[in-house]
Length: 249
Image (cartoon, rainbow, N blue to C red; front, top):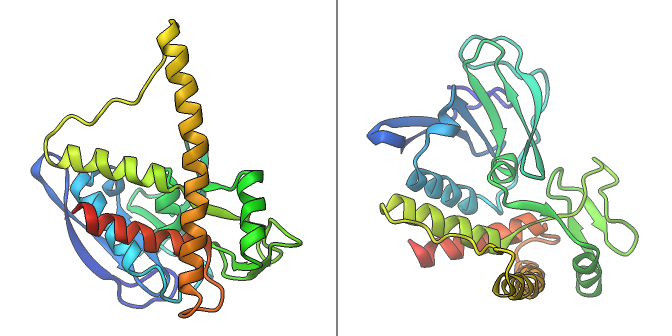
């Protein structure tokens, strides 16, 4: 299959699907994009989702080309429709075939669909500015001067990061599902005193997690500067995602 954007040959990757079936997705390393035939992104098994996360993390520092031109379905050659969607509070996009043959999605939007990517809070942005002067936009690669901007002047994207705590929770849940185990239930409140205390503890933990997220990314950015002039928060987070997957799998 040829990539709808750069027209290079895509890599066919076989994955486990739900209910014991198998499926194959097609990946363009140059564009950092994935073609899913109809419903494939909904049918992949938890173990296969982890495999896709690993593939994305392995290619996190490689240069990529933006999707350009009139993208066409690799199955029927009809024009792909640019489509916006939302997962919880996280918007993402893809290009879909109106005849139902499938959709093209960038690595970044696949992570957004899985609720891994989110904008920085004002506190996190200030902490980042105190430690890092310039980063690359995670969407288009243009430089962002953090002293002046929190949006990319080239494409208008906000500074975003991978939520490391969400990544760890999702990976643990997918591992449990892949192993046939029951994932741990998230903590909830029941309206009593213990519930209020639990909620207070959870809020404190969330604040600590938020701080540890940005601390880990700042350390990763500093480590990457020897290899690339201005890493992005997403590429730095993907390096950490790869480390996390290697430890857990």
